[in-house]
Image 1 (cartoon, rainbow, N blue to C red):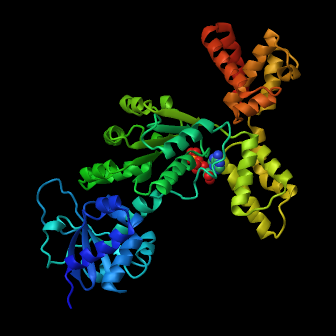
Image 2 (cartoon, helix red, strand yellow):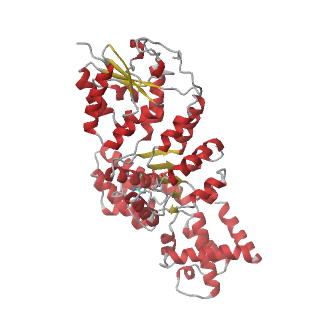
Image 3 (cartoon, rainbow, N blue to C red):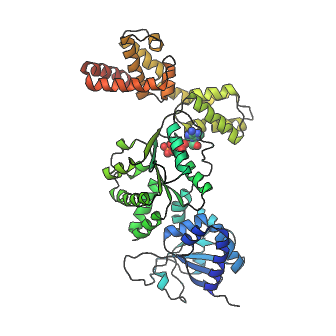
Length: 498
Ligand SMILES: Nc1ncnc2c1ncn2[C@@H]1O[C@H](COP(=O)(O)OP(=O)(O)OP(=O)(O)O)[C@@H](O)[C@H]1O
């Protein structure tokens, strides 16, 4: 018996409805219009490119299942995407490429899209301008599948939450305590804490992405009906530019307005991109007003985000800004141990300690060293030992030593103030020693990647609040005391050449 495309779709919807939440069903399946059934290929029309990507990302399994049940193992699904032409005309538009079924099959070499299309059903993006008005009998005009593949590759594959980034494996330390606990609060009560937006900033490889993705994963796990979207600012920008190009800015905005939790990574990327910022500003306002949660990361504090509009920056201040510092020694130890446990790696304690001591730049580098050690050990069929670790780290340690290090700073500052270097680490509170110590701490903060805690530790076991106080005192004196300022400038020259 010949099947009618509407009946097939209604039956598919039944399967889908039984497998997903009601809210998701309403948002993502009710707007779909079945268009045609031809040669066991069901064509459905979706409102936008983003919509299509979302379906492919989140519902491909249930779609496959429903098509399989309705059309059997040879059944396939194709999408037609309404392209907003910016006018009321909805004539079918001939887009530049083959229209034959064969040409429209995703090619085996089509990369991630081909992988998605594997199995009983192959789904591929098809743009059909004004498809709703296209006569049902006429075959829709299909877009080059390779082109569609590129869209999938760029816009879809890179945008998922990485489920390995969780709070459980995000090690807590002084370096990230505030950001982590604010993140946890947001994850437990998105949109309802005063941390909205939550802005996390910090240097390269310090765990910004891990933390904000942990927030997303936590929300998805606890409230699967919430629409969590993680997107890099770069991708957001590219999507926006593309939407301008194909005249579908409204689709773009509509898509983002559906989001419950928007996680935007690396906002600094939007610097100088006024139109993108304007769009983000509107999305931000709308989501915020609707009580939706916004989480952002940046590689620098908001005050240093030159090229970002003031009205946007002022929005960032509505919530909480929390920074990530370089992890101190103990946190680095804990991160390595956690990683070892996670990956089932066994490394002797003295090697772990050596790594934690030596790699004090960022966590990504620490992980990189660990991976290279494991690789060497398995290649050479040799247990990891201190010798191997030293060999592996030779180049990194040389780099670290070439930098201005704490010893050099202490020696230079002590010499400048004509004091023995030991006094900087001693208990004495004599005024001239205190000043020299404060200046040395100030430069340690400025020129090394040591955490505040680690700096304090190298100055006779002082705590991190003493370091903060010292840095502040020196900054204040630079502003208020001319001769002090020139001393600091003279000293700075000694470090600049290094
Ligand atoms: N506190 C932590 N506990 C466990 N792993 C961490 C921690 N901080 C960072 N990492 C790990 O370090 C690596 C780099 O982190 P991530 O990519 O989140 O850094 P980032 O700050 O976003 O970097 P970039 O500036 O390059 O975007 C990741 O593998 C992450 O899991």
